[in-house]
Length: 557
Image 1 (cartoon, rainbow, N blue to C red):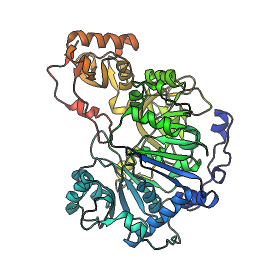
Image 2: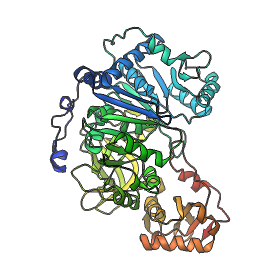
Image 3: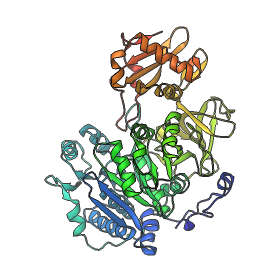
Image 4: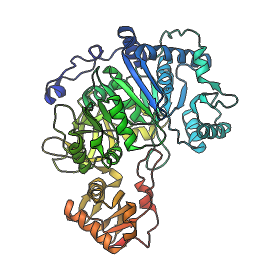
């Protein structure tokens, strides 16, 4: 399959990969027709998606099954008036109908808007009106449908609602009944052009309302690197990415790159995460490749990992937030496997990664993906020297990389602020070492300037997280008349440490940071809280912590 899209598929070194990776871009590329349906034609029985849930229900879909199901779904959607350019929101959690639906929307040339089941009525109203959504496809869960029904009177563009059941509210269409009775599907003559809008994500954002990140039909081609050269997948792989389909990580790890590589995508559909259940899944199904945010690995290493047979697992990756080196080391101690880190945004595909030909450095994101022209620059726009902090930027003056978003929909001003004059500004700060590895520092707005030093939140958080008392923490800057800013730690303690809150514990945590990182980075103020403020996607809202009123019970020194 990959031979159709790459001038060279196999590389023997990182230098070879950097120099010779090149995608052959077809005219009017459509992932559903040109990848999924091609697999169905050439290898109809090849496993494509293995789905299971907490009830131990199980379904294995071949590529032929996926073609048939997506054709029926496309025919059903078309009968409801959904067509080219129409915007359709999918709230389907980890149900296999998500894959049927997104492929069907691709086949129709429509715009897919994946969304989380955690949205409230207010969130749904904002998204429907901002994007001018025409239809909603949702799981028939009482909580999910309740919020949608409540929102609909204030969503004038929404014409159609479809439920996958078991609950189908009055006036809604039944998804399963609809595809069962669908007429034979006829492919549209010209479903799309490469530049047409295909996928729209609302970023959760740590400030303001979510932005609408618009991707075109070429976006999946950008994920060849994700599946083949970061997850290191092939046709024998059974790959599990732990992500809800409402987030961008789902198409990163459960769709595009994986099916370019011919891997079987494993989907575990659960309501509540239990680390022991996940380890049992690894053992039962012989998972070969795994990707999850660092938080998941932090929970896994607290389990008795050695009692599970993980011999089938041969590759592990992480993204979504920076990984604490102590988690990397413990996972390797328990499994013998490195965790290959990577970096990207909703606006991009994987931009920086740890690839198979290179040593993984604990805490490093890796090196630039050859699809992107990436640098770290200072405030004067000059390339930073090794060890110097600066913003990660992507140059687009010579060519537009596959996978870079088209625009923030309906917002030219915001688009031009981020991407103009041949430069896309990520807003993320990093350093680069002598070997060319990139190291995440934090969002540009989050970097703390204290007594002339620039301190990244992540490095202090990583240090604090190695103390057994700390479950979670967030580092922010607090105004100080002498130093400009001082470092503040907002800390969630493990239960067994909560009765020790006081100056003695504060000193212990401060000394721990001084001993595990540069002493000037230690938090001069520490506040203990029950939980950290977060966005709907789980990102820490440092802006909310910074803007909160000073806590008279915070400990300072």
